[in-house]
Structures are given as C-alpha cells and as structure tokens.
Length: 387
Image 1 (cartoon, rainbow, N blue to C red):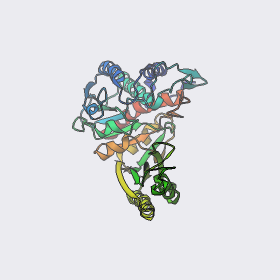
Image 2 (image 1 turned 30 degrees about the vertical axis):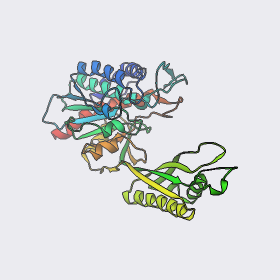
Image 3 (image 1 turned 120 degrees about the vertical axis):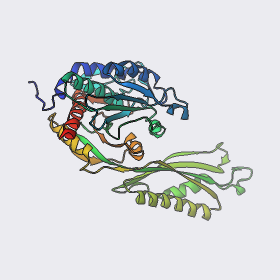
Image 4 (image 1 turned 180 degrees about the horizontal axis):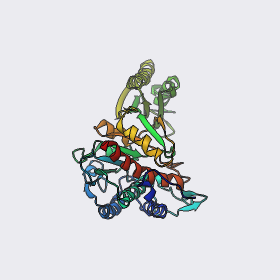
C-alpha cells in the first residue's frame, strides 16, 4: 500500500535512488583527515542540483587533505531566511573494500569494515531530499549545506570552520542513533583534564630506596575520585594512562587523562575541581609533583522548544507520518561547535546503530525517512515563513 504524505516534496523522494546514492557514498573511502575523495564526489554532484560549492582552509590546521565544504543554493524565493543542513564527510575508520549487505530491510557491511552510515546516511539523504524538493516544483528559500571534515577526531573541522563563509544562521544536523523523529534540543559542555605525576624513578634492585612510584600515587588518586555517572547531568571518565620505561624501573612519572561532560557548566567545573583537588592532595601526601592541564572541548547548547527550528521539525515530521519526541544527549556533535559560533541548530535522529564498529547498520526505513524529513523540513520552513 502506498503511503500518502502531506508533504508534497517528501512524496517525491525516490527510495531506490536514495539507497543507491547511500551505497555509492558509503563506498567512498574517507576516514578523518582523508576526505578528498568524498569532497570530489560532492563537488561533482552538488552543482548538478544548482549549488555553488566553496571549501575553506581548515585542513591546514591539522594537516588534512581538504577543508570543510559549504554549498549554497539561492532557492526560488530569497525572501525566506536561509536554512542549512550540516553533517560530516569523514568516517571513524576506512570503508575501503566495503561490501554492503541488505537483509530484512537492514543495511550493514559484511563484517570486515564499518558501514559508514555515520554519517553518509545524512549526506545521501540531504542530496535526495533536496532533489525531491526540486522535482516537486514547490517554492523554497535558500538552502545551504555545511559539510565538515575530521569530525570523528573531536569535531576538529567544525572548530576550524571559516565562519565568514556560511550565509545561513539556522539549521539541522542529522547525526544521532535515534530513529527519525528524535529531536535533540540540549547537548553537553565538555572538557578534558590531564594529570602528570612526577615521583622519582629508581632501579628496583639497585637503589629502590630512592624510588617514588608515580603509578601508585596515581592509583591512590584515581581510587578516591568520583568517576562514572556523577549525577543525572554529569559524567566523568579517565580513559588514558601512559608511563613506565622498563619492568625493572620504578616509574618516576605517569600521565593520565580523562573527560568530564555535563549539561551544567557549574557542575562540569565542580567535577574538574574535585578531580584536581584529589590529585593535589595525594601528590602532596606522597612528596610528588603534579601538573594539571584542563582543555575545553566544546560548550553546551540548549535550544528552546518555542524556537522556529523546533516548531518547524514538529510540523515536518507530522507531514511524513512520523512521530517526534524531544530529548537531550551527553554525546557531542558538530551541533555544539556550530551553536557556539552563532549558527543555531539542533541534532536530529537518523537511526544508525552500533556506530564505530563492524556491526554498524541502518534500516532502509530510517534512511528513507531521513530523506523525506529533509524534504519536508525545507517545504515547511517555507510555509512557516510565508504565513
């Protein structure tokens, strides 16, 4: 039975064309910092839809291959505020020699590579969704694609995006494991914290009496720290430990680092202060020297439910017969960085699962609905601004 959509544009999404486009994009190898082939593919396809394409020079900041891609379409009515769609061009691991498998409505790899649905699913859906808008013949305002590089390595491309290039100030990022209909309005503040404990190295047999084991000092501090889920808004973790020379040498120094995320800047700072205070106390007790470095990763965002973007997506989901729900996440995304730099946006679910593993998959239903919702968002954005 054919499902009828209120959205005229969404009804023009061609499921077979979208599937083939996704599979083509998934097979284009483009791990973080090596996105040139993806950029080349998009540079060929986007102008066919009427986009002008610009690249910035963000890659020079991290020795990458290519910069962020910003594509602009004038639309049919430039009196409408422009709307952007953003995602990243990179995958966390290579997709070279990808062999996609489709079974029971699920797309996966053969288990020897990742699938790269994170986030080639969004890239394909943006292209098909906009193509459907054109083919439907509906009026629409200017549309912009902001496609970043090196996202998987820590939102690096978005951090170095040339923010003088984008013309739009509001948009969407499909980049979440929730099914289509998920609307993420709040994201966390995040900071890294690094500790270096300086004890004193010594040979275990020849002069152990002068040794001061930095590992044991670090361990004492870690056991006293509050880690994991601190409260329902805050999490903390120690994820890296480096040190040691030989099994016969008492280690004189150790470096370890972690991360704190919270919906509250105050709670984030409080947790960082706690971790720092514990290690200072333990280091002083054990006659060790301590260095502490805190790095801000990104700021949090919190978009109100009465924001035009949220109203628009609620109406657009109804127009494609999909239920919506609003939520928040402690996961980071380019959404954090773009909001921090004045581009108001929210994260939407597009349904990929088991990302960053060889068991990654996405349903054909979520892929199709991402394309349909892209088209519906453009259509509804125009209607809302013409009222």
